Image (cartoon, rainbow, N blue to C red; front, side):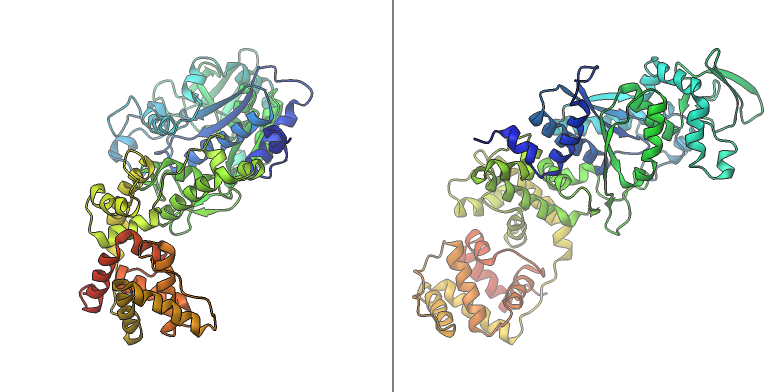
Length: 548
């Protein structure tokens, strides 16, 4: 009998691929630190965006996969580079003048423009942690400011002094001549202004682990590299952090990929073992541009959660991490519905199939049962025609369609109903554009009304279609509550009215009745909205009351 671990060792799901790579690090002996360390890095120069969340979500998926194939303890650290100097002021935050007055200061020394936390760095860290906690991630949060100032980084900083020439040699190869002329891996924090200084270093002193430099006014200073007086430039900081923490795995975006050899070599020079890496493709906004914290383009964490569940976001993160993906509001309905499709499929799958199913990775091998008896896309269509302003309005239709459903028994559906109303109001309603049917479409719609009013007429339409197709099979018995029967009726009427490409018929239904070019499985929509209600909707369209 195949065990879960045996199946996981062969699984083609990308988290298991990565987990097996990490496991190879400890084929001969377990880690001396007592655990395998997964890390994610975060630069809190602006409000956290979905890409930041994606790193933690995906790393967690790999960590969970690792825990299936190994008994070694694991830990996940979220490391915030909040001692970085604020070089660029984000355009999507208030109090721009306040921020401008504090340029080049470490982010944890910049006042919070929202006036809620001790600093801008603390504010952005709290925003990230709030979401990570909401999602239920198991992690430890590390602050670079605390790491530097409490001396936890001192040993590696001293090694950076001892091996200064070697680290500089690695860095200088990657720099243009003009930049290389004044570059140093060390950035002093000015004792008076508190600003992070990008100035040439006059000397690096290995006897007492200090650096000497002139500030921007020409005054000479000597500072110890330890105790938070100095920070490393961001590329050396990457490798130094890996060495200091003994990191085993870290993922980052494709824009870092060319620097990977630099990070790795510096880690090794400073006494560490380079971690395994995973490079993911970047997230793009509606215009195909890279999502940026400073620009605030693309979807924010809060925006996604206004219109969809955290699980749907996890589902999006699982899909094809090596492929650049556009993140805009229009992907949300698809992610909601596909997530629940995978949930429904999971119980009937083999172990191998379950390990390849995204919901296994989203829920750590324990996915819940889907109670979404109505797809999210259908809820949007229902919101469009029902004129419902709250969830109670939608539930009136839902309970008639699924009598056993309720907000208490179907909490995911109840949550989705609220999401659907907000999404419809903000994104669908403003774009609705109804049109009048042409003569061919009008005749078909009139027949559809007749079929919905009279089950015998519905059966006759199916029989007519079967005869046209040369089929001798009898039409099914009328069941005006069945999605499948109603879909067959709609399909038959389209064929009977000469729609060679039935997509044109269904597109006409959507554009005339729903004001959109795409829509739901129409038989399911009729069953949900109601046969009588659909008749009224079609009649209003035929009377020209929708296309106004």
